[in-house]
Image 1: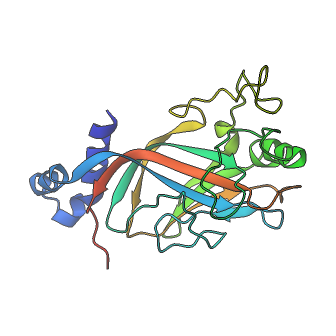
Image 2: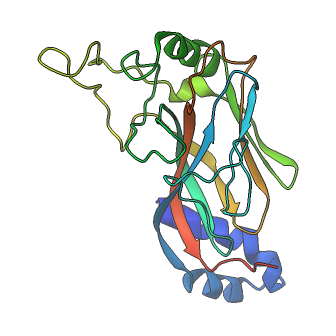
Length: 225
C-alpha cells in the first residue's frame, strides 16, 4: 500500500509539469526507479539552544554544522515519499563515533543521570517536531512524546547477569506514521527542526538526536538547477 500511495503522491506532485496530461505523467511515474529506502539525519544537542535543525541533503547545514559519518542524507536528484519516521537520542564519544546505540528514552546506563532526566522531561515530554519547506510550514507541531518508548525490559546496571540490554524492536519502536505522506524533494529546501520549551538542563559533549525517515525512494526524479 505504501508503494501505491507513493506513486500517487508523485503523480499528484508532478502532474502540473506535464501540462495536466495524465497519461504522460503516469508514464513518467512508472518509469521511475522506486525502492524501499530511509534517510538518516543527525544533529548535536546542547544546553545553549532550544532549537535544533537537521540538514536533509549533503549541501544543507544542520545546527551542528557537521555531516556525521553515520548520516544518510537525501541526494539532490532524488525524492522520498515518507510513510513513517522516528526520533532517537544517542551518546556518541566523538563527532566521528560510529559505534553508539540509538535510544528511545533517557537510559541512565547510556546517559549521565542529569542528561537522562533532561531527555525524558524537557526533550521527549515537552518538546516538539516541526518541518518547513521553502518557508512553508508543512508540519507545525508534533510532540516528541510520540517517539518516547520506555520498554518493559530495561537496562538498570552494567550489562551482565540480571542486567540485560533494553528491549527494543528497530522495525517499530520509536516510529510513528507520517500521514498525510510527506514528500521530500532533494532540490527543495526542507528544514526539519526540534523545538524545546527551554534549553536542556544538562547535555554531555556529543549528545545527539537522530531522525530517520522511512518510505519509498524515487531516484532521479527531480532536476537539480
